[in-house]
Length: 446
Image 1 (cartoon, rainbow, N blue to C red):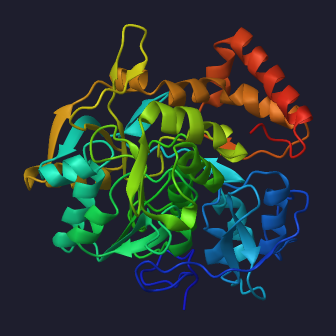
Image 2: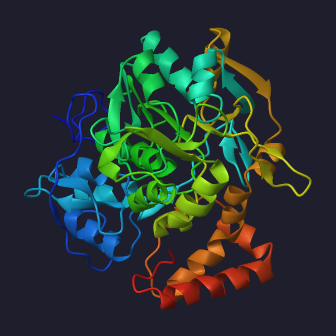
């Protein structure tokens, strides 16, 4: 049987074949210095040795795709509340896995996708179309984080038989404060999984190379799966993603519940981060009541500051490797900052491949989503965190390297040009990153 990095359909993948299956638990891999495997012939390193070096550099995003290259690995929360690969058994990597790791792992490298015929925006990446969108179904629009467009597309793909299943993330039924990867096969399951999950989850660990499947996941997971399938735009599963500001620690969710006056994590019976309105409220339900917070307090004050170090070095928080990427289509105030007043949800949708364009237009034709043209510059203004991060990232990477840290290699994003366009800000960013790395015991500013 071909390995999970093969382009052929029906390839094996790690994790349970049942919906809602989770990776097994295990012991920690000892971290080591990063090293590049030799091209051609026998690789100088195993998957596990390379994983250890990524962990040592604090460059792991927690995507879980390494567990497909070595199913003897599993994903487990570390002491800081982030998902990391650990050894659950003896190595089980297939031939070619070690060489594949360097191009697949987002902690090693990410390549910007530039499909032929697409338009390239320096801050938003490549696209074939940009729209505001929302689900026609009012329940789906209300339940989704920002208009329910991705949930509607997932449901439509499943209902029409275009895909057999969608790998995505959802609340853990056994412990709702946690988030787990799931496989959904119906509209009802898609609706139950709707809404953002601002917590660690490794959807990449249940990915498959089967093009009759779909994956809705963070940009790092999607880029890894795209690379895993050889970068083939038609040979991978349908890839759906969203603009991602980073993965917070699991501890941040539990701390926020306590700060709001809620109970211990095991006493929470339901928890959602957003949705049920736009942008929606962080809400934890328990026997006898519930606690909640608005988006500014939940994300802005509690969850956002707890994002992992790798996310602060991310060149692709906007899902460039996806077929379709979604974002919040915020209104802006006079200063250009997003306005988070509650209203009917609206997604921004970007078709990043011709396949994505065909899906979006077909979903509109089927009456599943509403579309209206969106000026890319307006979207860029509505996403200041993403645009500012991209403008300053090259300088941040330089600062990290000067501090002796291994960082991912980014190809095709134009990062140097963006940073050099603002030399004073670049220098300030470089110095600030270097200072934080020298002050941090792990080399990453938390």
